[in-house]
Length: 192
Ligand SMILES: [Ca+2]
Ligand SMILES: [Ca+2]
Image (cartoon, rainbow, N blue to C red; front, side, top):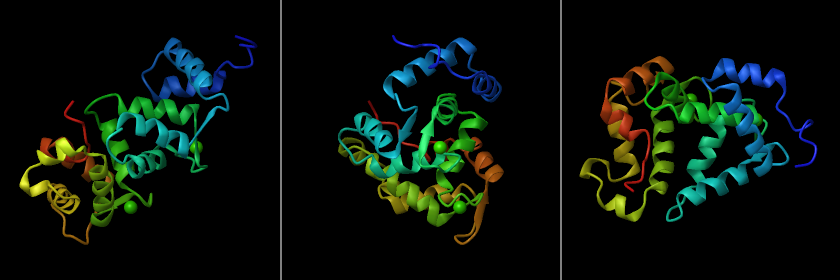
């Protein structure tokens, strides 16, 4: 309702998004209308983003993980997600086991954004993932991955690096693509 004209997505952003994602113009326009309805300011703050995550994980502490995800999506580092960042995030996280998704996973693990992942960063993200895991799922974890440290150790082994080495993006993507075990450890999907 109201003035729909001024609320339309700009041609420039539209073209850019069509290029960067496989979404159609119709899809992008629809998402934009949705986005504007739910987020009239046109920007999602970290707090709003955390609130969204909390709804998906009502029985656990999603805050730390949500902070990391937010950081990985906020590509221009201005502390908010605009429509473009939001759509690219949607594109990267919804396309399954693709190189694109793994590049995003890499940026999630690269906490200090220096282009490499260290074992300390892997531990940090594993700790955040652990806070997401529900009590029920926690009880079902295998012995060798039932703490954040063990999960990080196990994941790190897939990259065949020393503890003080670092993993570049290509090595990360390759390591995860070649090992289903690694793919499972970089994420948490609730069992139901
Ligand atoms: Ca931003
Ligand atoms: Ca890093």
